[in-house]
Length: 253
Ligand code: ADP
Image (tube, rainbow, N blue to C red; front, side, top):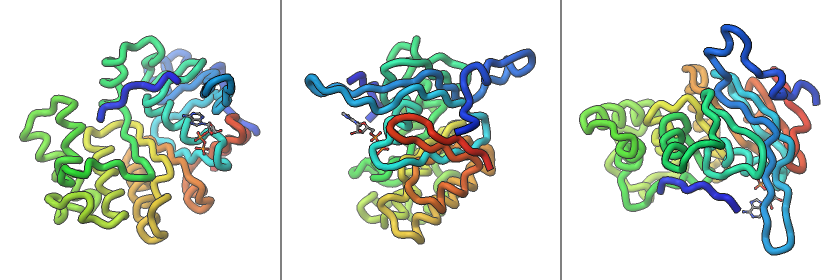
């Protein structure tokens, strides 16, 4: 399996639809997937997780990715997050063809363009909330004074300023996920990816996290949200549905 090295219906768009022409050439879509496939091989058995995925996502969209368990949602998100490589096809983000990049260039692209939120929060247990949020800024080489300022800003945004010095284990699930959102947006990435971010939360805390993602989208961040929850999926401006690794529906509201 080609795993990247990680730091710690009807109107399905095809590549033909998204080729930039004229003025649009200067402003490519934020995300362009063309002919993406993913196979996992264990011994003689190959599982096709994704096939023939053509998907273009414009800046400012709020896209939910839905589908039954095993339909390829997490695999698609991992490829979008540059945490896994497709078996075939092309992925461009911000006009950059990711298939031709060195591992360090991939890491740099991930650090500057993409924030990821996972179901299990994935905070580092022996770092305080503020240090968890600061970490991507340290990786990005941001000077210390700017880092402190930005950490304070994003913790205020997710309403966790008063818990900045706590360790993750001292926070509720909802607070941990808000800290994970703060970490994901610390370096202001244009693309925010969330894989079942409410899966471990009760409905009140889940609603708060989805509200936060919607507010970030309203402020300009492009958001892709994997969710099983139909109510959350409907909050998106576009719903992409996967079945057996293929897009079967791509509907804008
Ligand atoms: P979903 O997120 O929709 O539940 P996944 O993307 O996790 O679906 O999985 C899609 C398919 O790929 C499933 O059949 C799953 O068993 C398979 N799969 C996912 N990851 C691996 C892996 N690391 N090795 C082998 N098969 C995998």
